[in-house]
Structure formats: structure tokens, C-alpha cells
Amino acid sequence: MKVVVILSLILSFLYANSNLERFVQAYKAKDMALACSLGRTLYRDNMRDEKILIASGHACAEDDFIDFIGVLQQRLGQTPASRKATVYFSTLLLKKRLISEYMHEGNDLSAYTLPLTDHILSQVFEAIKNGNFTTLSTSPRHIRIGDEQNYIDVSVKKKVYIKVFKEGKQVREHRYR
Amino acid sequence: MSNRLEELHAQYKKYYFKKYLKVFAGILVFIALGYMGYTYTQEAEVTLAESPIQNKLNKVEPKQVVQPKQRPTEYKLEVSADELDASMKKIKDAKVQVKPVYSSKKTVQKKDTTSKPKLQEERSRVNLFEGTQEKRSLESWIEKYNQKKSYAVAIYISKQYYFNKEFKQSGIWAKRANQLDRNKEEAWLYYAKSVYALGDTPKARRILNIFLQYKKSVKAELLLSEWSQ
Image (cartoon, rainbow over all chains, first blue to last red):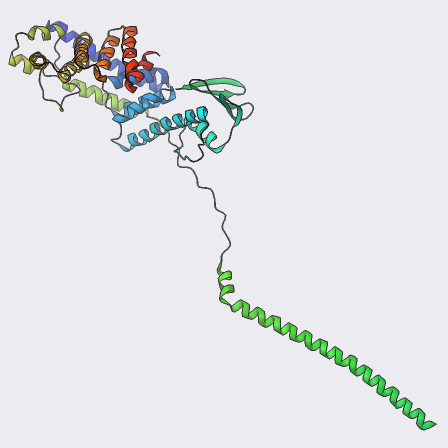
């Protein structure tokens, strides 16, 4: 029996470590989808290290898991870096909601001034706020940000779709609930 | 006759004298008026320049062009490789130092009937609740539950099992807790999470869907969205 217990301990220890190592490797390699998935697993396994949590949140923000970063940030806030990260995460969450509201109901966003981030949601939010876009249709709302060749196409069905086009070709699609 | 001519000549001179005198007087009046007018405007300018209104007007500086405020610095997130490595090393070191003693599922069930205080002490766990809860073994919690059935105790046992990665037991206890109080979210979530951890994703999703049918839960929705990936 003791052997089984020790074996299971070693296995669980190795498994937990391998998850962490895989996460670090994925994040370093900029494989944000895998890093986000592993980051969520680490979060569920009660991860408390703030650097790992920030990296998980960053990966999930890039991989469009915006709702998860809202949950994640409750474990952050002990250091200046993590407080900055919580601002980043909260901003994205709010911008996502405001864009969604605009796309569904057409509410005015010009009154809001929020921190600028390097995320696509920030670009879209600033463009809508400043009116730098072309409306293609109003119901359902469909707008275009940018010039003829390089632009961001924002549309809404049940979710908000943000498609990034470069030289006329779609290079990325984001979907937000 | 000659006298008459002299008279006429004198009258002629007198007439022209008067005429030139009038023209000269007119020119003089014109020059005088011009001079007076000039001096009056000069005086007016001096008095206006000395007046408090003009002083105030003179003090007003030309408006400066207001530049639009620059937006705050961009927020960028990037955790460096060194920081991640340091964190990983720290976590590994901490794990090596702790070395918790876990008990297997079977031993827990066996000891349920014949519990020994010494063994119970040995099995105190290192988990999420360490430091916030009294260090008691699972057996004592199960005994407590057997004495008086309570939702709080059942869900606590379920959580303990869950964090010890004994998902089957965790599911059983979550179900027991759920039977005691069907409105509590945690029991549903731990039941679904345990089933999911055992590999039965459709069943886990079904459990959450049942819960969501009669109660709104952000956590359940989040879990569902994760599992649908």
C-alpha cells in the first residue's frame, strides 16, 4: 500500500510540474492558445504565484478568453506589476462589454475615457469612441475601421465578431460573447 | 476826371485787398481748425492710454494654443522568461519542502470505522484550507457528518477529496451535499467538476445545464464555456 501511495504522490507531483513547465514553455513560444489552456488548469489547481497568473491572463486575453481574466484577477493585487495587470484585465473586460452594447444597441461611447492597451479591443473601442469608422449596416450593426486594404471589420450576430484584414486578406478573427 | 479815376483805382485796390484778406482769413481758420483737431486727438489718445480699461486691455496676453492632452501610457503585458523561470523554480522548491502526506481513498474508508488518533494526526493535509481551517483529518469530518448531517460538512469533505484529486469520492460527497440543499451552487459545481475530472464530460455538462435551468450561475456558465472548447 505504501508503494502505491508513494507512486501516486510522485506521479501527481510530476504531472503538476509538467503542467507548469509546459505552460512556461508555451508562453515563451507565444503559443497563447496552449498557454491559456494550461494556465486555466493551473488556476484551478490553486496556483497563487502572481507572475504565472499574469502570464496566464495575458495568454487568455490574446486567446479571447476575456471572461476568464475577470475571474483570474481576484487572485492578483499584491505587487505593483500585478495591480497594473488587473487594470489591464478590467479595462479589457469593460471595453468588451461596451463594444458589445454599442454593437447591439448603438449606445454613445464618446463619454468614456479608458486606459489604452495594446489589445485589439482597445483599437476597436477607441475607433468607435472617436467615430473613426464606416457604418456598413445598422441592423444588425456592421462597421469597418481603417482603409481599403488594412481594416478591422466588426459585426454582430449573437456574438461580436472582430475580423482583422491586412492587404485585403483576413488574418485573424476574434469572437466575444 | 483824374480824381474820379483815382477814386476808382482806390476802390479797386480796396476790393482786392478785402478779397485776399477773406481768402487769407479762411486759410488761417482752416489751419487753426486743423491744428486744434490734431492736438485734440493726441490728447484723447494719451488719456485713453492712461485709462484703467486700456491698462487692463494692454495686460491681456495673447491666447496660447492649447495642445490636446496626450493619452495615458499604453498598458502592455509581458512577463519575461526570466521572471517565469524564477517563479517556476520557487514553486518547485516550495513543493519539495512541503512533501504532504496524502491518504488513499481505501484507507480513508477503512479508517472510517476504526479511527486511531495517532494515524489521524499523521494524515493532516496540506491543501487550500491550510491555515484557515483547523487541521483535522477527513475521518473526523466524516464522523462529524455521520453524527449530524450537514451541507457545510458534506461540501467541505467533497472539497478536500477534490483537492486531493480523489474525484470519485469528491463527487459522492458533493452529491450528498446537494441532496441536503439543492439551491447551493457549490455542491452542483463540485459534483460537475468531479465528473468532468473523471472523464465524463457530457454528464458534467448535463449536470451544469440542469442547474442553470432553474438558477443563474456565472461560474457554471464559465465552466460550461471552458468545457465546450
